[in-house]
Amino acid sequence: MITSFKPSFQIESAVRDRLAEVDKYEEEEEEALEQLLEFFQSKYFHKDSVLTFYFPAASPTAQIGFAGEGKEEAKMEVKNGNVVEMIQKWYLGGSSALSPTTISSLATSLSTHLSN
Image (cartoon, rainbow, N blue to C red; front, top):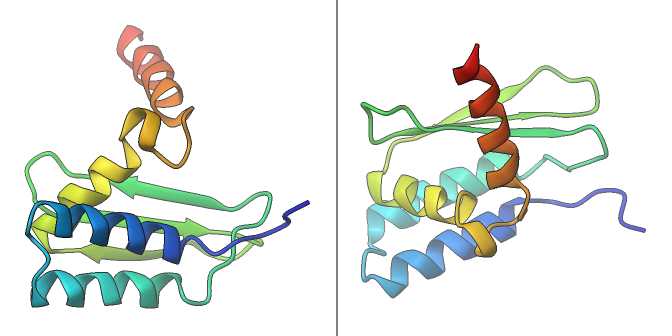
């Protein structure tokens, strides 16, 4: 049974591969991915850990939050638009997303909020 894991490699690898596939992996994207790796370096996912992604509609940035083990939420902002785009595609990628239930959960939550 896996009790914890580090998310940094999965995110970095998926985003880097997608950037390379569309020929958008340059020095700026590499720097943004290094910042992402640094953010996740000391974080482990345990049973009650929470990872949040926020993609403001009017901004090419993303905000990532991590809370776990009763600690205060740590946050970072990704400012590279190409990296943000690929994080969105990775995270919201339907059948290729890390969690196949993410889209269903998001749709259910949005439906609940919109019907109120």
